[in-house]
Length: 499
Ligand code: ZN
Image 1 (cartoon, rainbow, N blue to C red):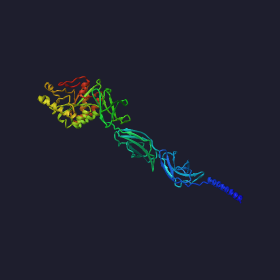
Image 2: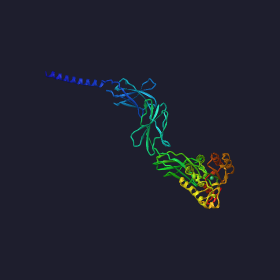
Image 3: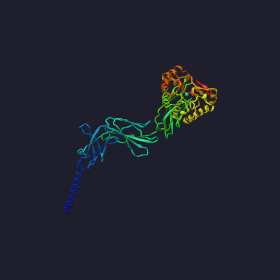
Image 4: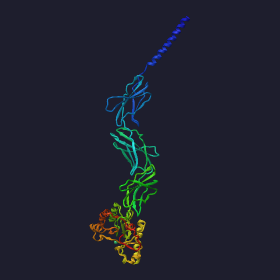
């Protein structure tokens, strides 16, 4: 009985052991086929297309398959051997559409492919190639791409977290100028490409730039021996760089200014010299270059002529003459009548700003030889007071009406008196051709030419005689400049008709 029990026990235990072994063997060999995973999405990321799906039970990993648009074939592109549920396909080509499915696997058992393929066009992130300050704002240049429906530009102002779309451009664009910028502010940019509903990732190479405005209204004025530059300053700028070039040279920086003016004492003489300026905040924040302005320093060894215009100003004619002088970088002298100064102050200020000289031609165009002593004095002084109110300085030369002087007049006038050597008689014939002919036949080095800026015939003549004289090699200067360069020291009460 005891033996039987023992045998039964050992039998039972061996059965149990065998059973245990059997169960463990079958557990090791039995695998369950996973279900087909469902696709979740395909989206554009920085490195490629990011494919994601919904995890399934019993999956050791997933196999990703791809079908290129226009092809019938599904191609296995990779295996993900973990419980991951996404994959970045980096082997995609820009603007090509791809369709994706995945299969789950468990050992050698593979699921069916996803029942809901997902597709997307890959849109590569465009590289921004350059960002720089231009006159109208900040200019971006970026890679161009074919087949795009549009390109979007995003901006973030320094200190802000928010990117804001500032422009939608046509698909083949490769540049954009952001003109809604403020000097001193720093901006970051990124660009995204769009094809239909697909859009490139956002994390482009982000570029930043501080905008610095361009100095405005640069004026180069030829002084006696130097060029004086002035411009409209940029608020917040820490300084300005000044550039110069001659007609056949290249732009070179010649100096730095802290305020909005610069004196170029080394400008070459006798040729046109061009200038540009830019503003800066620091070495990395520099504006674009301004519009150029030019000046010409007089060469004392070359011939020169002083054109003079009396009896004005008269807006239509004076401005016509000033337009010509400005165009050719030339200067003239305007002997103004004092009673006209306040009415035509704009003309006088413009002439002065172009480097022209303003002379005194009495207040009422009074013939001084017929005026009393006190009248002579007041005719001159009231005119100078009016000129000073207009341009901040007195006239330093006087032309007597009709050129009529006497020893009495000369002793009363506290300034040099200027007559002329070429009389065009423009007031008498009012004929453009005759003004031109008179200048062409009578002018020589040192001539002072008499005209009147009251007649359109004289204004029209300026359009011909200014370029003609320059072509003949004459430098068009003011009366005082001509005397300076010719070494004539004018003194009060003396009459000068030429240099
Ligand atoms: Zn006159």
